[in-house]
Image 1: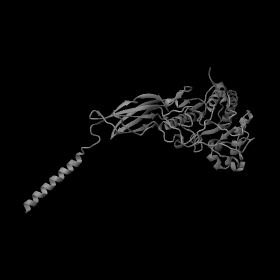
Image 2 (image 1 turned 60 degrees about the vertical axis):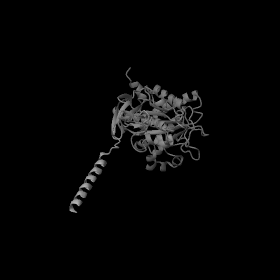
Image 3 (image 1 turned 90 degrees about the vertical axis):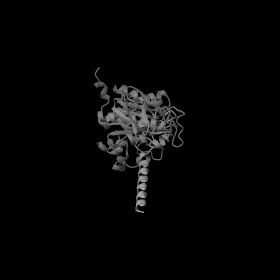
Image 4 (image 1 turned 180 degrees about the horizontal axis):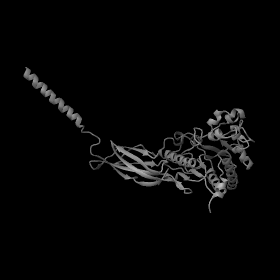
Length: 408
């Protein structure tokens, strides 16, 4: 009996060893026979904020492997990929877009399949002042400048590509002629100072994207719209960082259009009509300074905040002295019950509400101001003079002297 029991235990032990060995051999290991190779997008040289296409091929035992998920990520440089997971096609190929980040020098992106990785590198070069850069399919345009000023035009784009479906919610009205107005303001500033502001322009129609909204409302899930949104704001980020590094501070003017009955420019500081309808004493409270997109100016000015917003040296009153009707200003301090536009994602992201020394103001232009080339030209010259004076008074930068300081 003891001998039979011994034989049984020996057989059982052998069976357990066989089962454990079979489990540990893992014949279905997804890594087995897998190779991952780079097809395109490696070792490129491109300007910061521009993009390239990353393409890989997946094979198993030398044959293309279809329907395999490839994971893409931007590893360094602050960039982004358009698709973080892409399944291979029948040829074993998968691709994604890689938007280079704000850092110059080497940037790295990575593709991974079943634990197998390959890295892509790019040499990100600095943007050249005065050169014009276009994003994918010319959806976004950017012109780097030298002044401590950025001009942005988000809502006058004409492009309606079929790859981007129409947005199903949110405002879609086009701010006609604000793109041309932005260019005219840039040219007028160049005439006055000898140098140019940075300029960001969205060429997609507002039915496809709204870069003055957060990405959820702006792009509504379409990857190509999201890509354009990121590119637009990344280039503004780059300009903003460069300006702060050189000047210590700066300002963005976001150029919009409105169709309200009263013909005047509405100035947005991320303060709504209810905020502006308060008394000077109330508006001088820290809570209003801290919620504004010119928080840095308000907190550091020798003037009270109400004076910064609607006093003698406010943007609106300087505009008034240059022949431009604007609100808020000393002459028109409050909207009261009139329609008034004030706020947007661009002011929040690029202004100083959440800290920093860079400021942002939204300019909502009535239809008459932007109706034809002559009125736009007159206005652009007057606004350029206004900006030069405003920057000198509130940022302490004498842009009018830059031209005189240039060496022939």
